[in-house]
Amino acid sequence: MNIILLGPPGAGKGTQAGFLVKERDMIQLSTGDMLREAKSSGTEMGKRVAAIMDRGELVTDEIVIGLIRERLEGDKKGGFIFDGFPRTLAQADALSELLASMGETLDAAIELQVNDEVLVGRIVGRAEEARKAGLPVRADDNEESLKIRLMEYYKKTSPLIGYYYAKGQLRGVDGLGQMDAVKADIARILDK
Ligand code: AMP
Image (cartoon, rainbow, N blue to C red; front, side, top):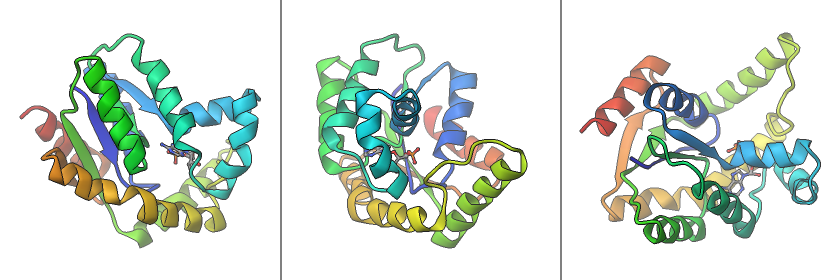
């Protein structure tokens, strides 16, 4: 089973992907995590994307498609969770070609639906909690980057909702509920 978790920054994609990895032996492919790793280990690519990520803009399609292509060659286990990918229509087309070339299909694009005020609160809260706990704060978890991340989402990623709806693959869940309620809604979709 292969799924996409769709939704704006702070919608809870990473949290829900974490549950699915633990409970269903799925593989989380988060391009954000991969890029942050490249950035902190100081690879050439990491250096190229650092400033773009900190500003909250999207990195090029070529880079993220390349990252996903590499990971798809590995073990499939319980299937892939695409978390934070695709984020543009070009990425969505590339993903569908990559999966087809492996004889795989996409089972669902699950949209975590939230409202913008909640998002801003969650992200600012996430940064504050990390600060209190002495943990590293994401360089893009500040109000200025957040505005750009939201704008990038609405301009470039939100058209994917219509794209997957038209393909008959879109499933919506209420992302405003408690973590466990969201998790149960996702489980219902996967177990259908
Ligand atoms: P995330 O952790 O998913 O919020 O991603 C953090 C940042 O990494 C984004 O704001 C972008 O700069 C970059 N990024 C992650 N995934 C993608 C993607 N699929 N396409 C373009 N940029 C991405």
